[in-house]
Image 1 (cartoon, rainbow, N blue to C red):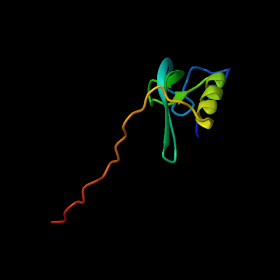
Image 2 (cartoon, rainbow, N blue to C red):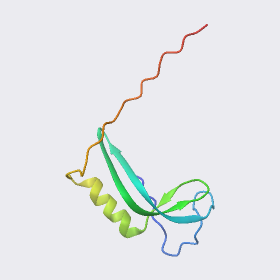
Image 3 (cartoon, helix red, strand yellow):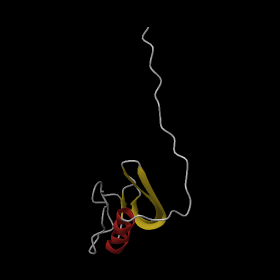
Length: 90
C-alpha cells in the first residue's frame, strides 16, 4: 500500500511536481482484493498543483494499523462495478 510520508524537514513543496502543499483533511482509500477501506477526516498535506497526498509519520502509522486489522465499520456503502459497453464497428 503506497502511503506518502511527509519528511520532517519538509520544504512545503510536493516531492513529485514541486507544487505548494496545503494542510487539508482527506478521505483515505485503500483496497486489497474485495476489501475496501475508507477513512474520513485524515489530516494530510495535499499538493495544490497535482493533488498528491502526503501524511505525517504518526498518521501513516495509524492508517497502516487500520489497513492491517479487522475492524467494525461505522457504516457500509454500496459499490458498483463498471461494465463498458461493447463498441460497434462501422
